[in-house]
Image (cartoon, rainbow over all chains, first blue to last red; front, side, top):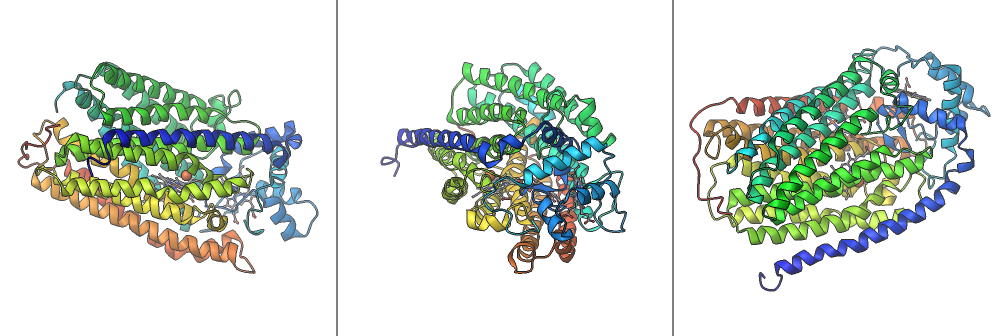
Amino acid sequence: MNNIFTNAMARNTIYGSVLVILLFFVLTFGTVRTLPERVHHENITPQVVLGKAVWEQNHCVGCHTLLGEGSYYAPELGNVYQRIKHQTNETHAGPFIKAWIEIMPTDAPMRRQMPNFNLSKTELNALLAFLKWFSEINAANWPPNIEG
Amino acid sequence: MLYSSQAVAKPYFIAAIALFVGQILFGLIIGLQYVVGDFLFPILPFNVARMVHTHLLIVWLLLGFMGAAYFIVPEEADKELHSPKLAILLFWVFLIMVVLTLLGYLLVSYATLANLTGNRFWPTMGREYLEQPTISKLVLLIVAIGFVYNIGMTIFQGRKTVINLVLLTGLIGLAVLFLFAFYNPDNVVLGKYYRWWTIHLWFECVWLLIMAALLAFVLMKITGVARELIDKWLYVITAAVLMTGILGTGHHYYWIGTPEYWQWWGSIFSAIEPIPFFVLTVFAFTMVNIRCCEHPNKAATLWALGTAVVAFLGAGVLGFLQALAPINYYTHGTQITSAHAHLAFFGAYAMVVLTMISYAMPMLRGRAAANSHRSQVLEKWSFWLMTVSMTFIALLITTAGTLQVYWQRFVAEPLPFMAVQEKLVVFYWMREVAGLIFLIGLVVYVISFFVGGEDKGETSAGVN
Ligand code: HEM
Ligand code: HEM
Ligand SMILES: [Fe+2]
């Protein structure tokens, strides 16, 4: 086999990856072009941007997932808007989520705890705007159901 | 050891092992917080402990890679390291950055840390694996550049072996792909998209090249197989990694707001992603089978074979199991993900660094070629304790994940997340027990360094 498959041939197989990289760039180009529509770019207001900062600077992703990415310790939050609306039968989930974040932690013994982040009114409203914007992203019908 | 500058690897390896111990201690804390939800709350909330767990993981592996490169490159390039002083300087810079970052995580709240480090001027924090303050990331980038420069110059001025070139390609890729960690646009989906260029392309592309090069080096040394043959395998593995791993990134783009065509591309390329892992396993066993000499370091041989096998199981099998879009629709972001992450990381990266340490450390400590028989027996015990307990962790969490998917996502009347988690406590308790056994294995590993006895001598291996 040594003579049939030489070292030079083995080395040349690496050039195949050039095609793969090109295809990766083409698909990336397609993605970047269609994203504004899929995420409703026009809805990314300054308030949503602030909400994103609040989200990141309090490390919500250290316990929760956002569209399945993050930690698996606490509920998915990409669709928390829909879930709370469904649970409370209200037209707006905002007030409930706000109240939830403000009354944390539950201090229920043995139960997993979410800290209190002492957010200001502006920060809380921005966080909600962020979660609301996020819940409207076209994520190919994921999660499979309301429980996330 | 052929060159005195290879000795700079030693502090890197020692620090790597110390941080590895820390990683496992924090793993046990979060494992306990899974079942005793208020354990250490509010002093050490889950998110902080988890962040310490994954941060320590990444940095001890990076230390291990750097130490390994400093050991391998001079020997392969047939010359002293370009600048041993720079290597030691960068070691301390890196270590101080790691410790300060850890103190920041543990002493103040994350929001305060973000504030203190000026995250608002250049926000990069608060994303999984990229939690470090922007300034820590910058220090890491500088260390990476200095390190690649040092290694690159050595190779440039010396012999350019295939092992060195594959290693260098991986290391340059590591530094370049890290640049995407600094890009965090307002459009969260776009940010998620490019975050994987760092995370996925590290784990499943450039780190794999590094891992393959390290394994090839150790296998060549302990089996005495001709370099020509090793090179041929390494070429094939490199090609397989690049051709599957790059577009395999698509398996993270199914449900995060990116176009549906990724479900096709991601699935197709993920389906062939196990190939490089399979080739690696065949490679390792073939080389050991056709070895021409008996190297006295039996422990290193065991680690090398173990790396290939566990990487194949954790990445090739557990990764593939959830990689096809119709399956991933249900398993995405569950305990099944976590099971794969653990076994793949342990098998591919933790074990390859331990392989390298096992091979190099005896020589770095002035022994002929291997530790004493007694020391090796302990090391082999630690191998089995850690490998078996990690396999159990993966199996337990896969089972928990399967049930989670069933109750939370599959049945007609799905249960809420928290209700499902309560049903899984028995698995989490068993994971904690397996984790304790893992810790025992790690302690045995550390003890094996302090066991004396007569060294094993040189053999005819190492003709390459
Ligand atoms: C031995 C005891 C260990 C225990 C009890 C443990 C426990 C945990 C827990 C509870 C999480 C958080 C999962 C979540 O997000 O909800 C986690 C995450 C993680 N651990 Fe460990 N761990 C251990 C060892 C290790 C080892 C040895 C490695 C790698 C070599 C490792 C790598 C990781 C990684 C990569 C993550 C992030 C997973 C993801 O995002 O899916 N852990 N671990
Ligand atoms: C050494 C190699 C590998 C390592 C270290 C690794 C590590 C990881 C980690 C840490 C995650 C969790 C990411 C997160 O937190 O969201 C992950 C996810 C994933 N990996 Fe791997 N992986 C490896 C190889 C593979 C391979 C070969 C495949 C496919 C054949 C694969 C398929 C996947 C998939 C589909 C996910 C997403 C799971 C989800 O949807 O939640 N991985 N991997
Ligand atoms: Fe991946």
